[in-house]
Image (tube, rainbow, N blue to C red; front, side, top):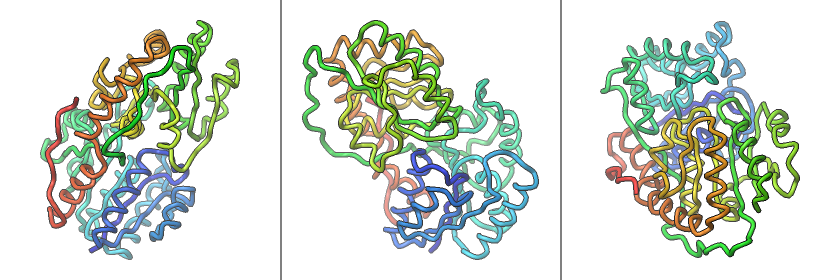
Length: 378
């Protein structure tokens, strides 16, 4: 049995969508399924998959931005890949290949799934192409296939634009973690509080608000630091936002192979965004027993119970983000309390095993095992 898994970009290994396709691919391979990938270009993500022993097709004409000529060539190439691989199922991840892949699947009579990892038509000023994707999704909804939202927010957005309920399912993201956490110790007074964030340097992430909140916190004399992990096209611009802050407060760390190790060394995870699906970085932080501060967009509120496992901050609200960060600096007991509550929420609802079981059951009809029901958020 064969499956073809596709993702638009190959230029980063830190995105949640890349981690996702690695995890489901590895699970499918463990089940004896022949897994092949197709990505746009020959970037670090494609190379990482090849190093793991997967066959990877790299399409240089498959690009994120809309372009009629490149998109048409990429569609023909996807059709060729499908005929060559002959998969039983095609699983398309992220917007561009999600559109082209669904068309290619229909033309080649293949069962297909589309996992957007956050709907591409969220109506926010920063998401300038949302109207094009909204129109495109309305048209593509007439094609055979299933859309898999990673949170209820995703499904609600598709229902809002008129996609039938029967075509949209929800499989919550999950991440690997321990069954127990040990030693979330109370922080002594006077100890520096360590914030950490990991997000691509791109338009979707709101580093402007984060930088202003951090600068305000520093001016107040708070004892804290912020480590920033990530890469992306806007790296120079993002670094300039924090240029006025001293190196003992702000450190850019680049990309690391195992972010959970760095989470273990920190106190609070922060995610400042303009829009989101269901952020896997938040799940990973909860799996490490960390308190979380995140912008209240997308499915973040399906992960965070405000004031119990962390804090939800209104979009672009510098004062609110500053206040939440300052609360942790001044009340260190909350760091451990929220971290423990977040871990319990993770273990009940968002483990990697739960997510992978659901994908196997959905894609292959329960042939490889059952599915547990989604629990209640703590």
